[in-house]
Length: 197
Image (cartoon, rainbow, N blue to C red; front, side, top):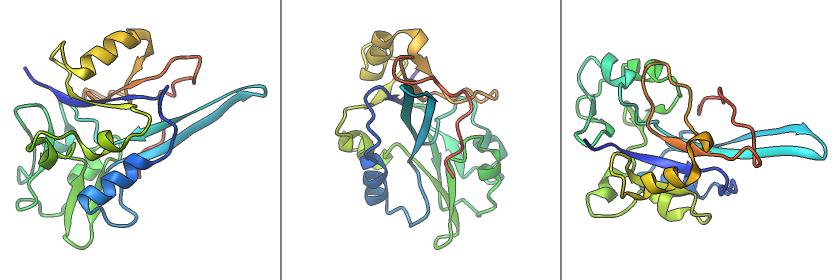
């Protein structure tokens, strides 16, 4: 099987928000809407032992995506390589998928009257390029590829980090595939971070 997804190394992320800006520019994302949002987690602890990290959030590319299940028109669908996409021609703007997403990773575009989200820059993938956020990350904290391929960048960086340092957003039976790397020395992983929106 193939499962394209994102791995983000929070030990490297400096919270510069270049990924947010690159995403908005590449995809024409309206003001007040985010496909990719960087959250600040912390500070936590007591001085002088204080920790904080930045958590870039995006569509979690769920294996059993609730947004796909609730879409009445089939506008939200899963591709053969595991990505979750929206056919804007079929979307009726009912926002059922927005309600179903446990991460707040979908937005309603008031101009086009359809729901939108991160597509992992599918249009760039089609011409052999990485998503805009990956290309823009000055800290080299973002990795994109097929997590089911042990030779892919995402698989290699996860293996090098060790399972105790690999995290995901809460799984409510939807099986998110996006993974975050965070070592305890750099921050205490928050099991229930705030939603994107």
